[in-house]
Amino acid sequence: MIDETTHWILTLVCEDRPGIVHAISGAVVTAEGNITESQQFSSSDTGTFFMRLQVQSAIDRAGFEAALAPVTRKYGMTWELDIVGRALRTLVLVSKAGHCLNDILYRQRAGQLSVDVPLVLSNHGDLSGMAEFYGVPFESHPVGTPGQKLAFEDRVLEIVEEHDIELVVLARYMQILSPELCAALTGRVINIHHSFLPGFKGANPYKQAHARGVKLIGATAHFVTSDLDEGPIIEQNVVRVDHSREPSELVAIGQDEESRTLTQAVKWFAEHRVLLDQSRTIIFK
Image (cartoon, rainbow, N blue to C red; front, side):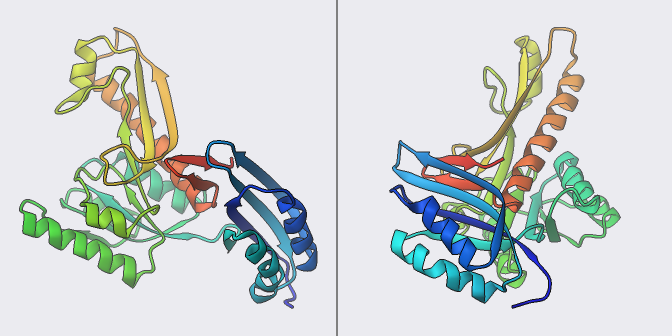
């Protein structure tokens, strides 16, 4: 037992079957806990049950885990226990655009985002000043050749190991990750990109959008997989525009959407509100 009450987050995933909620509630009672937040979802597509609880308890981690063990074994649960508000160890990858990095580091400093960023890693040196402003170490390594790109990805894995990184954020990192790196970091890498309707790919998408008279600009935050920009979607936002907008205004609007969409996705992930249901996500807001 410990003197102070701890506010825990418990997430669990298992095959959907009767009795799960009752069993978990009983385990929380055994752990002398009080449920302060509870959300659950049963996926009819995959037959999977998802649950997120916040529990206040004076019992320590070992005691809580011991109370959960009979239930997690019985139902074959994949589960995680963490402390509410603990800063998630996060590596941020960037290139030249700084809007997403600035939003993440600002909100982290302001106490609005529960992440701990030990390093910003880039393939360019442009954003070193921004990282320095926020007091975050910065490294840049070129990726112009296949050997350099391989060395960069090896450095990513070194940092993940060295700092026990739990999340990697591609904050407008304009390089495609190798299938090997995607596999090594499955479920731990979040990317952001624009989402025009209709879509515009290649160079100068905002110029293309302006030429076509686009009416919607959006952004999509998603998990990274080896299928380019096709990973499970975490968050999307959209804003209306019209013919009066110049390309530079579309860029500014799009960057705002990218920043807020990526930060929201990171926030939910850091709070253990994002659970994977095969190719889609379950978001407990």
